[in-house]
Length: 86
Length: 249
Length: 189
Image (cartoon, rainbow over all chains, first blue to last red; front, side, top):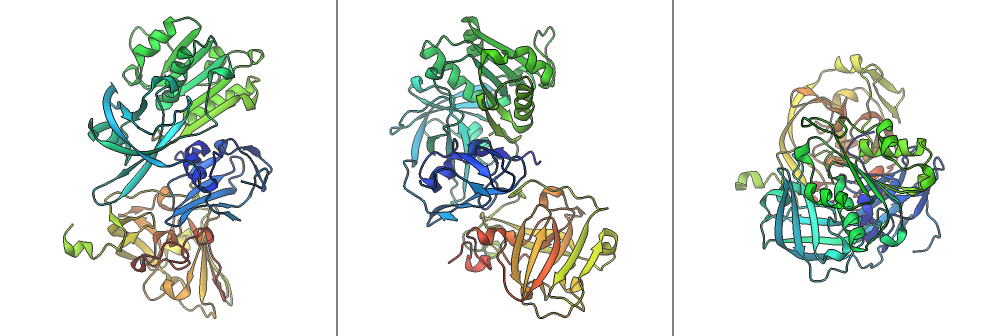
């Protein structure tokens, strides 16, 4: 694992922009390996063209947050979030 | 599947620097006046955005060092070689300058007095910053919960908030221990090595005490402590972690 | 910055003397002993080289400007690499597109034409030293005329395709082509 990775706490601002609410306590399930836990505990890569949250167990891409002039969008990949509403 | 942005309440606001405090040779606290500050909880952070004269922008997160009761917003910043934002905040920033920040953010790594305790805190380097907010909040709330803090730093000169931590430790039910990993004075009664399972076991409450555990620091430090606590029988769900890279957050 | 230099900076970019490390995932650590590079897809026969075989191909020293979509540009970067013209020499294909795949799962797509004609390399040295893992070593794709996310780090395979297939950032809203001089950062730009 690269030592430059941080955890989902650092992505709180980007996630708030994308979802319109505090997301770090939301329990996310990795659909690749089944690992479940708060988004705060995922591995976050911030130094990229977007914020990439990966599963701590299997590295699968969970959520990619991209900010551009039109707004901030969260793309969900190998993740299941509760509720399905925002 | 993409979700479009929904308007939340997280806006960029401008704060004015009203004071600068040298915590150590490489660390400085920045006290800000923010007219629209909504208040915060201990453990939360802010995102700071700097815009250079040519328009280039850089952004970084900083834990709030002030407690909700302090009535001021304080950030503690470490100068880092590879940082874009931190060297400016810890070095060139002057009283009267302005900063853009958004927050408070973060609902996970938060302690409020009503959560109770006992509190078990592990700080690696600048990971101690959110714990200053928590300890000040605890004191302001006349919180009687017992607290244990293990604070790891490279050298004694790198320990920040020393006097304040000393005062807090003198005031009963607060046990603060240090480990220095590179150099230590002689004599030195604290630990002299990087945190390991044995050290964690010695400072930790037992699982039966059901402490609320918070671990903050570089990734390696956090993983070592969190793994040790789980191995010692503590409930994973009672352990909150905040990792930053070697850059200190 | 003097006007002569400013003309080398695409719109919206800022010159840096650093070399920022940006990554969407953990840094792979691939030993030279296990490294291979392959070309597959719309080819009569897939090609594959191990490190020794790849080093035996003729390589060149090049100096190019690079432009990251996160707004930094770095001028006069020096690399050693094998031109894709050399890699694909003699390859007969009806493919119009290519997808580069890397250790760790990263992918990026581009028209085959943008890899040919002296425009792209598989680079394995930077500044006269072996390419460091955090910058894409052992070898990365180098396509300086496009935004640098197209220069896939840790590249291991090039798949030639009849039709286009968006890669990692292209799937997440970045521009499918990525010309910095047209400021093609996001889809729809």
